[in-house]
Figure 1 (cartoon, rainbow, N blue to C red):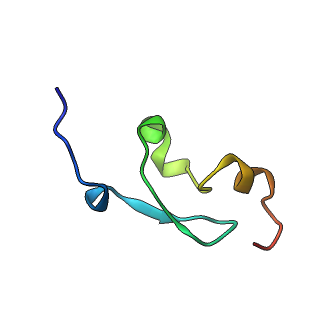
Figure 2: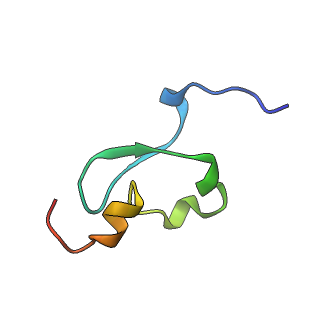
Length: 50
């Protein structure tokens, strides 16, 4: 079984749309380098100032 990690130990980024920090998620495991937005909502409203 995988080793448990604290949320504070996970890598994080700043959302390109809203500017808020977001943490690594399991579903982004393979594509973490290309993730730029914290949510689908921010991805769809890219270009709009948040």
